[in-house]
Image (cartoon, rainbow, N blue to C red; front, side):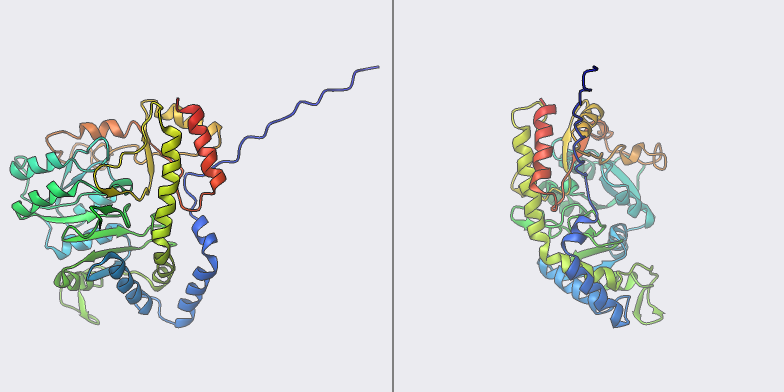
Length: 387
């Protein structure tokens, strides 16, 4: 008689923890968001109405600033500020190459020349020493530098103190790119309140995200706000009458209503991001890969939790076997991309640290709706694979 067949237990692969989940926040906030959408649908007013005006007031109040102006997206928010400040052809705007390409695209949208500077390798944000150097001794052959766009990348504030001093001494405008830093603090003050104006993307993945494209900018300069409010809608101050050349970049009522639901929850969402980051910090402690740096008197809001590894791709694959999804922000610097390669001027450091970073950065899962079990799954994978 044949022996009974042996049953070999099959271990199912672990469920994947997504690096981001665009639907998670909606599912968590569904009743309030559905009510806001119904309110707009039944109102009969869908563009630049009461919802947009209310969101602008509420966002300005949350920021502690005089004005906020809603617009179509974060790229347009930067472009509108540049336009409002009179930045255009025959002028240079200094920013970084380790950023979403939107930052540089906005500069070229107004006809200005981008000058791409290097980053601090610890924070991934603009190297203040290189900025000071180019303001004191601008690269030859470029139009005069008239504005600087520091990017508060991944949720960590730039080292703005030396930057602001150098820009004020040179008479150069400062436009803060806060697309990834809603609520981040520098010296107890929200980023976005230091420069002449600040631009925020409200793309669905952001710390404050709509359910489609949206953007907002903030400023304490009432005259600048009025100019921008006109530019975003064809230069109108009176309907159908263009007093200046403008564009069409309006925040629609649906997105404004959704953002009004989410704005009061933002501080708690940022706190949850910091809680998740602390768990990852502990899992990495004592290993060869350091947690993200928090430099100086800052409050990080962890739009992304980014680590560095010289074996980045292999590490990503090992984490995947544990059901942990990762992403790369960003796989190539702006100046390395076909649209900008060999035509975009670089600062004196030639973006050496930037080029090293894009070969090593890896973003772990981080969004407020991650469960404690999912966070522990990531931590366990880190403890096993990052040693």
